[in-house]
Length: 199
Image 1 (tube, helix red, strand yellow):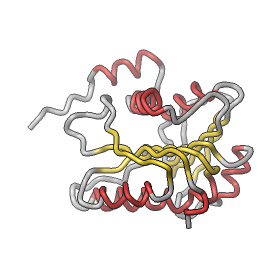
Image 2 (image 1 turned 90 degrees about the vertical axis):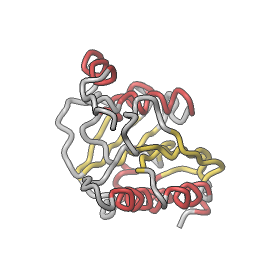
Image 3 (image 1 turned 90 degrees about the horizontal axis):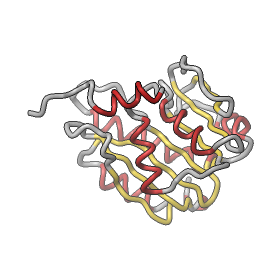
């Protein structure tokens, strides 16, 4: 079994570049490869704590863009002026309030959210979180918008990709280099939201 190396190159790079976590480089690579986020976009980050994806999204959208984050935990790290965070549960949140904070429906929804892991049923809990994300898209994501969300690999993943693909022009699984080799995480990346198909 591969040894888990916590202080790897991405950990050191994140610390050197001022990101709160190594996961910053996952979103950076996803966007570099898939071009989900552009300057001036409105971005919603679901499960945003501790804030590294907020930092990356803020840099990409620039001063004309807006980033709104939601998490059960408060983001304690200081964020740029174009970032607003909300404490709340994706299954209970007022989607209208998120849209109001963003100044309109979002062009991109991203999520690095994961369930508390126990080693038993983690994949299914991860898929449930992803389905919660799919369930709010009609209320928060504009037509033609994009999505990137983390899921743990397992038997339900194929079905989840198909469910996502039914709502978008395209949906694919993608594993960034910054993900640890021993990790079962991957990302579903989707482009071209078909708002009329969401329910």
